[in-house]
Image 1 (cartoon, each protein chain N blue to C red):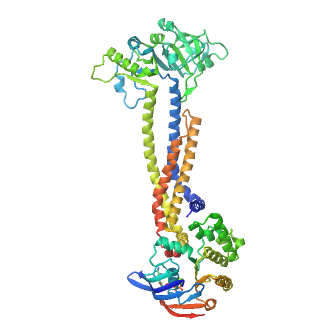
Image 2 (tube, helix red, strand yellow):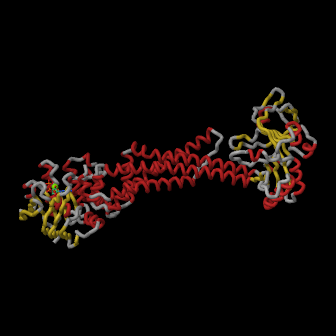
Length: 225
Length: 406
Ligand SMILES: Nc1ncnc2c1ncn2[C@@H]1O[C@H](COP(=O)(O)OP(=O)(O)OP(=O)(O)O)[C@@H](O)[C@H]1O
Ligand SMILES: [Mg+2]
């Protein structure tokens, strides 16, 4: 089992009130699965993704990733996990605006000390997978929205992570470009990657094998697509 | 993370905010410029003085009523008894470690005339004994120097510097000709070798006459300087002690009173000069430290702005696996680099200014290597100290909030 969540709770203190973003989520995801997470706005999808991506820590509960207890790790260990085990794709791309596509893709490798030559080779290969090798010296503002998201996917892939987490990756794209991104996701899944993706669109969720529906921070339904 | 990435980011950021970086760096630039410029002038001065002092024999010292470099009130010195020829004679007679004495006097601003030609009024008239020549490393290029006979007979003879010759005798041999200054006639008996200048003062605008002749016209009750030559450099201290003993006796200084005269050699001159410049150096370092403190606050301010502007970038880096210390390091490198760019500019301007000053004025200059190193260290420290707070702030950001920052 790749991901094992037991009784995950996430509370936010807003003023005097406590917001329960997630209440007692129990969830298992296996290696190679393609999972879509759906649910109304504010249901806790992003909160769950952030916890899965080790960007955030739960208020309570146990998160095991590859049988390692993530919930008790310190900042440095979490950074290490984010770097090696997780590839994050964001709705707003989150590329460094002043760096080239190649440099953006290289970034995770820079932080784990991969030597420069190898770094470049891996980054180029990753860009090739998303069909952007010819644009590797372009900056984000010289690329279209879809191309930017492909660069972001290449960055997520470059370290061969255990999971690819995508929080509404097509949310800022038109339908056609969104479909291109979904095709890439499908290819990645076919190549054996584990993908967890948040979406509002049923037709996008249909690409996946399994749909988890959240409501008010709880799993409402968990079924095969 | 590799330092390469940190430097790459820092250079990129500084390049993309040239004006802002420059304004931030003004404080550093001004501070470093000031210290490097001043330092190179002091160093130049010192080098010049050293090379001049080297010409003075290492076994010569001077007795004078006033100290060589005088700071503050001179009343205390003015009330002392004058140094007289009698004392020079006593030194020669009663000090076994002394080879010879050269009592001397002098007068600035002399205009010499030959027929219808006139020198500029910048000549220095020296009243000397024969010892004056070896004591000051002077050689006669043509003719002869002042001799005992000249002194004993108050002869109307003069040895002139090369500038005097150029002004008065452009086309003829000066030896044997008569020149006139201050209403008296002197025969030119010798011409000195070219001396060059010291602190912008030409050493070739010089007229040397026998001390006795000088005293006849310019008065006997003036205080003299006595150059004393020890038998050897090793005997310098002994000779000085003997001279002090003799002078205290002749001048009837009571046992419990300090000397009422000054003794200095090239060594003590150098020491005095160093004492003086040390004060200037320390003062400058204090002032520059304040300038750098202010500059450091500027750097801290701009780094805080930079951290805020790049919140999202920090979020991205944290999200893809940068550790907190990577972020800390990145911003520290940026602050240090920023500060050192200011330092380099300041060093270049400082050296440039001092070279310019040396070019258009008599003040010499030198490149102060030690100060440049200190300048770099200072700038790095300023960058480090004032970069810590912003860098720490950056590294403590919450990745999710940083990513959400607009
Ligand atoms: N930093 C925060 N502070 C306080 N409350 C928060 C914070 N982040 C999320 N929440 C709350 O937690 C709940 C879940 O938010 P989350 O962002 O996970 O929703 P979502 O399912 O991703 O919604 P959307 O589809 O709009 O992206 C919401 O009620 C939100 O207000
Ligand atoms: Mg969301």
